[in-house]
Length: 424
Image (cartoon, rainbow, N blue to C red; front, side, top):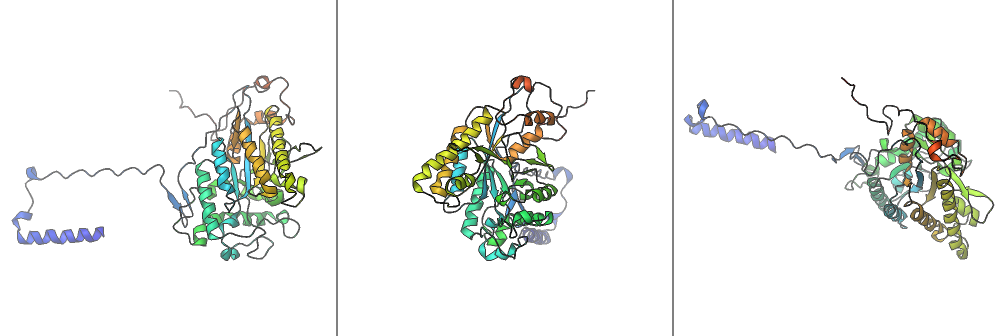
């Protein structure tokens, strides 16, 4: 339309000149009006949205609420990190995703949400998923519908803007010997990862929900870690994930000690904590507490629901106190958005968040934030920390134990000091 207006204006001026030739001649130089200066174009807003692909995702700038990690000062006691994470995160009729976002905000916590890729794929498009060692369209956790996808997108969008991390729980959740993830090759894992990304990056095309707002992040850059289904297949997944830019894995079982790297990725495995009233420890996950209480029955004896929830809460709190007063190893907790045994475990997790995340020197963070902090530390300091046993604080005290001056951070690592200009 602008071009049309310019052409019309030109014709009008030519006609006017034909009527009054004298009036369209060149004016004397001293009478020639000074053309107004063109205004400089306004700078692009810092929060400008740049759509990616079909508009399912977008680059919107740096993620809010991510503090720059800092190196420990000589003799400084480490903070107590706690990571709350959710497998197969999605918003359904229980609305647990939206609920725990509120819980996190109220308690100054950020978390990691491990999204199952098939939760972004509608049932009628199921054949787009080609699971390794399975026929097309197979998934042991099903698929989603457009309403469920729209609701999940809304929660993912809000969660990321609040500083939370969006990781992956991959896709079809295949466990066991019949084509389970534990039998997948490195190349099959790479296929699974690529598909998990593709379903997130093209949910608008797959659902037809073109009018919805995009996810406010580039998933290629956002995705740096995950947890494998049933904690199986870790070895080959780590190799595949490392080649595809992952920075951590949380698919293993460990004691409450400081993490180390495994095949180039931070091993941020879940940990064993006490089971109050029992003589053993179990994994920091709702499913594992459930199996030790009601077996595989997801809705056991209603008369025991309150006790079972208290047992998990108290086990997590005992594990927390053991680290907080001991070696300060990060506590890693994993859960599902499920109302097993009457919601006993959701209550246990919520009460744990409320009791620990507002404590002094405690940071309830995502895996991304924990990995950033670990990368910012002196490797020699981390090696010293990893030598502390479960619940064991340094005998000589933190100030003496960590008094040696750490080596400078490598250039470009989070937390490295700014390079000063050379003196002239």
